[in-house]
Image (cartoon, rainbow, N blue to C red; front, side):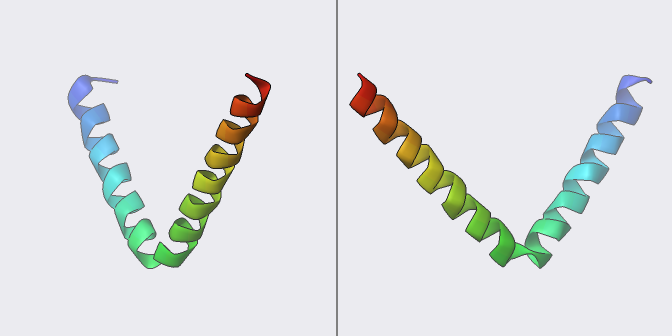
Length: 50
């Protein structure tokens, strides 16, 4: 595959992802909070183990 085609496909995928994100904004915000809390918990575990 040539570079211009892959770039165009990446732009298409990003645009599609943006629309999905906007439509499912509440789902993504919940997932962001979950991943942030998980990262926070993992950070606390690392601090306790140190």
